[in-house]
Image (tube, rainbow, N blue to C red; front, side):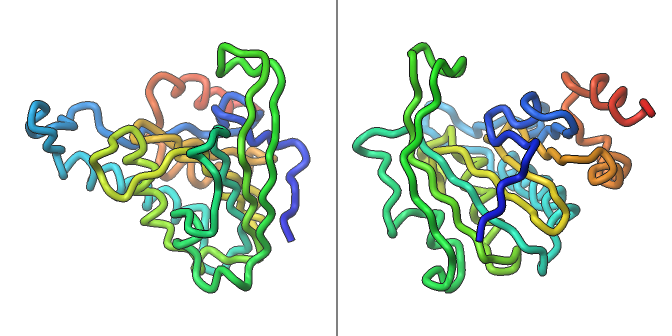
Length: 213
């Protein structure tokens, strides 16, 4: 069964909505996204490099036998229904054995949207371990989320929740990845080992977070 984390908000941007977190740069700004923009030809090196970095960071905080859940939510309209044929379900082995909860939710007065309320479809998939999930395929689809000609691709917010280590990961698109935790100690090893990947915009704030006592 899915276990809610008291104190962790599954709101985008994850990094700014939680007390302890890291924000990593995934796509490299010195690499061109396009080989030929007019022809719609992508630079494969950019996407391969982004995927390798995303997988590397993910594997630092998600071991193969960790107990995890996946929360996926998408803005609600007629075309964004979450069905059994959805991409996310196809990335999980023996999906029929998993606990799946699909709900329709509403957030009032959300700053992300110029409207009074934001309605979305949300699915929680639990009773899984990391090794049950094609993580690389999901991360690649998220990296591709702003590039419709790239495959695989899917829209929406995807949260990986690690119940074994009490951390949550969200790759929001090719630009970056957020990882948050209830306790700073859960992120210290990742911070020390991968500080060179931190997003420069938030680096000073993160460094202060981990240097303070």
